[in-house]
Amino acid sequence: MKRYLMLLAVPLLAMGCANEEPASPKSVYVPAPTQVKTPAPTTVSVAAPKPAPAPKAYFETKKDGTMYVFGSFASMKAFNQGGTGLQWIKKDGPNGEPVAMESGSDQLSDSLWGEYVKSHPKKVAP
Image 1 (cartoon, helix red, strand yellow):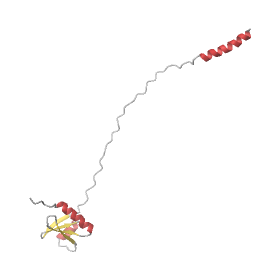
Image 2 (spheres, helix red, strand yellow):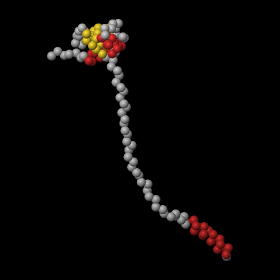
Image 3 (cartoon, one colour):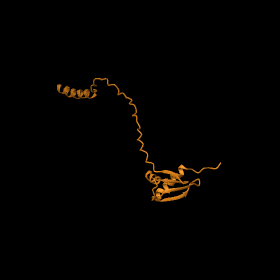
Image 4 (cartoon, one colour):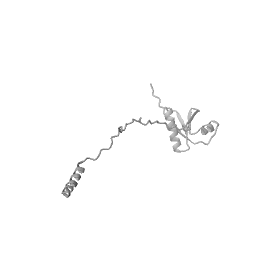
């Protein structure tokens, strides 16, 4: 009979252990993570330094009723000191005035003409 009790006791004990919930661990308070608001990164725009202005490449002087236009100060200085040897392209200005432009190349004379026209716009008759 002891044997039968032992045989019944083992399955009962096994069932009792299976129904038990595991022991819960001790509760520990852990605060929720706080969200720290960091300020948005500030951007500082630093303006690039402005390049130095290009050396002036337009000079003019009036002589004997004609406006002479030069691409360099050295050319104008040589002309004013009586130098010869410069080549000229002659045109009528926006207001009919005679204009002589230094002609070292087509690009130079075109550039000088553009500057001259900007500096001396056509006058409108009243």
